[in-house]
Length: 394
Image (tube, rainbow, N blue to C red; front, side):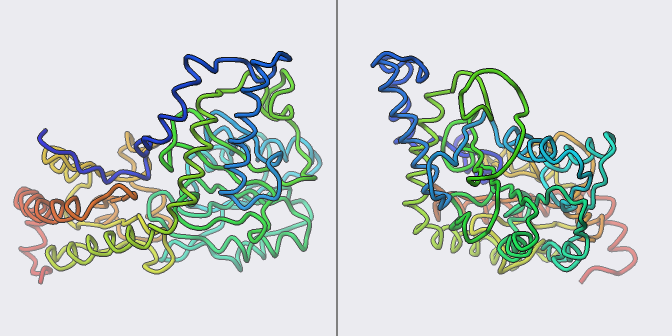
């Protein structure tokens, strides 16, 4: 493979060089336990505090103590939702949406098996949550509402501020999965009026294996696991100090580089324009205006998305056919199904996700190679051949 064009940044991102530099001392020189009483451990505790402050600033949180470090965003989601349900045991109703990440969606399906009633709020053809449906679904038995800020497959941004304001008036805990929003668009947990907000370091050029959960002061919840006093008892166990420090540095850089997101959006738009101009069977999935600046979900009708992925991989271009957590499945995207996109387009969907490290040369190369890949695959597609025979093309 002569070159790599990485357009799968919603799956994971490269660790920023500055982040790696910040982490390295904690593998060799600053290896103390932040819970230790001696000064060596105390120094590390101060480093943890700095990271907590950096993450708090990224989310617009009032205080660093509202940040709980976890192992992953999936863990953060589970701590948030089960934590609330554990405290409000008398309430048995949960509200989420049909397009959530598996971390929330599969948890809610499990909750149904445990006797909870779960309302799955539909989305429109643009992928945006139906807010009126959500509002009408709230009852006195509703324990928590969990809605993602931005979708991992389409980049579509949900109106979480409107939802948060509605729920705040009614005193209903609001959890937001912000994994695909933090570092890509401005986040302010106070404007959102959420009680809990989940993020993952490796989605904004931090290390894998560390996440965080914002927990608004005064939010009542039970721990998911029991052990020591770490992370205010919400996530006991010795902290992944190097990962936490890396996450803090990545958060600091992400906040600084939000100013670069218009450039990322311009490259995304160039890719979109090129695809639509060069490939007549292409279409775009999801809201065009209400989406993260780095994400483009396109369908190439009459072709399998997995085939496009594999052919592009031969060219050194890395893309995805959906969520990295479910891309091994042959099931069509639950996100696109919820948007009522035709199956012929769902099966040919590809996600391109950029980062601040994506270059114009990367986009030019992709637009150079992609049309040929689509043309090759169309020539061997039985679906395309059938459509030509019945005269439905062009």
